[in-house]
Length: 265
Image 1 (cartoon, rainbow, N blue to C red):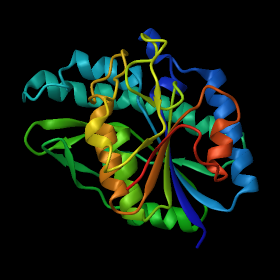
Image 2: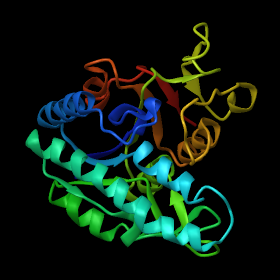
Image 3: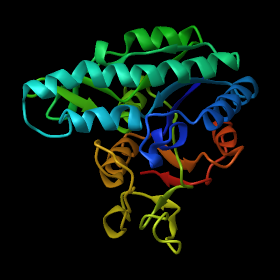
Image 4: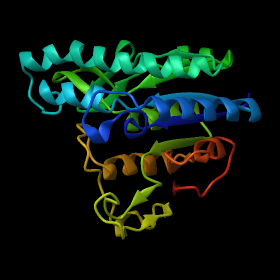
């Protein structure tokens, strides 16, 4: 079997998240789909893509209170509305990948998983394994799932990606954002913010990790990094890279490291 990579396309990269609009960034998405296709043709790897929901998920989720731990009728009304909004984004992502000749297929998390206390309790990967054996690229995404205590809950793509990496025994996780890695403070507010080149179990407690200023109902960067550190403890390395600069994603998929922030044991 060829090596398996998990690629997380950040909502900040493929949508107009910073503008707070549920609109796709067609230029970026098209370019990234092209880079993925080029790397797939040149490299010998299988691929699972998970994309963020951006404003397609965050705006309706906030409106219906899906980011609050209160079980209400309004919350349940937000389940189908939020899911349908994210599904529209997923369709456009899959279409962009298919346009580049990739065998990409939508993979709906809400039809497969259950959350408990905000964590994945049940999410089988048997079908995904079969798709990968056929060299088909499953395209999953941050979604609204059944939540045991609240009825409905949010599954962030930043938590789904490491979960799949562990269950599918991936070689590596690549996470793309609109900045070139993880910074000690928000680089959009502080031009002097320094990039953190490596995070590991030895320095994780001593470094300060900045958060994004954009609307995000799935929590800050710190929690996502801790999830990747947990994954690193299982022997699976991750790297957070900037995807706004052309060619970076392609190089990363083809095996180049040190392009952003590496998270390792």
